[in-house]
Image (cartoon, rainbow, N blue to C red; front, top):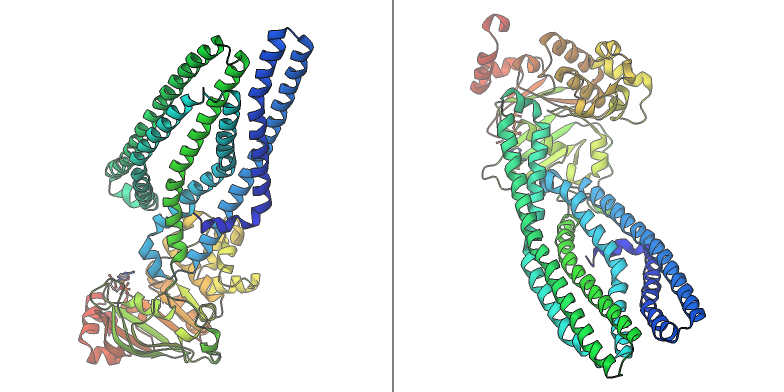
Length: 577
Ligand SMILES: Nc1ncnc2c1ncn2[C@@H]1O[C@H](COP(=O)(O)OP(=O)(O)OP(=O)(O)O)[C@@H](O)[C@H]1O
């Protein structure tokens, strides 16, 4: 919480003003009972009507001023707190953007969402409360005590008994409730995780008739979090009657002893009335203070979850500028030099001692069974992960010595699962190169075999792509993703199983066109289909993260048993002949 308070700095003045206005408002509230006591003791007892009117008007005026101060103070406090929330959310999101895939896996996407939204909202709320109560509670308490003492010091002894009783009973309840706050944030993470899985996987859920199962899963997580909330509220709800009981008993005691003191002539009626109000103000200020004590640890839990994310140092980041290479401009393709890589926590390496070169102007294909490590090769080139051993070079430079921006600028990547963004078709293609002209976008789409279907869409290149690309087919999505990569004019193109949803004819046409545009670039294609890799200049056969064959189709057909097996399982012999 204290660390996050740094984000309040830009709002220092509104915060100070808000505290000042709350201070003035509290003073006004402390003044009111004294005015009332004067009206009773001086005005009513002596029958002095002008005095009653004068003081009554003064009371109204003070109330009005206090009201205005409250409104302004609340406005400023909410301005500060929501500005704080916005800034922390922005910082957090910008920081998460720097994460490598390892950190995403470490915290979990759903938890990152909860932390960026729900947790920050909790802290925001508490800051707002602190701004309002931080001055009000102590001022009302101390001011109330002083005023009560000034009205009747002996009667104040009642408070000496009731106040500690009030504080202790609330603290006992708070201690019981607090552990649940930590639990509830974790349960919120889980609820978000299930919700996310269910919303993104809705098609699979329906096709497998698992709607009821998923409803049950959600319901269980929902019930779980509800039960914890109810438990907290049960504890907190006993607090209210208990406090009211103590407060009411205190009032009875004050009226009782106050009555005795009035009878003996040691106190006036107006003073007793003012004393009762001060006693109420003191108790409410204690309630406010205790509420802060309850809310602050809760926000503390959220703050530590936010700080945890902000403290994560991305595993993969730019080296110091002095160590960065400056000679990465020549097109030299991609080189793997004895690369070994193991995913965090995995026992076996996903890649072992892999060496190959993908030269510019050549098509290098990577083939192998599922889980063989094909996508991992691309992850290494993009530097989503760093090799444990060996070197990965792009344009003759170790990727670790390239600024990440520059490295990725040199690459046109088409992921295995084509991801599109909400916006028009041309926006989606331009995502690959903001400077691309309309002509370049059309050309990229034409090469990617997307131009025809885009033209058939209602508004052509201006047609809107729905969230997640839901209104285009899998194959169309893939072609748009290819166009997005092509418009980049990259030195290296990485296509991760990007033809899997295309029919054989489109696949063939696309490959023919690609070979034209990528004449000077290194093209690395990961594929499952032999027909896709058949004409590649070099085919790397991966098996369990190891290269078990490298060469052209003809060479591999003679020398590589694993390749032969793959071919035999896919192509019929006539096609091969
Ligand atoms: N983020 C990850 N964390 C841990 N293990 C991973 C991760 N990604 C992949 N793996 C593991 O690494 C191995 C290689 O995965 P990779 O995705 O490279 O295979 P692939 O050849 O591309 O498979 P496919 O053709 O099915 O996409 C697999 O055993 C996989 O389970």
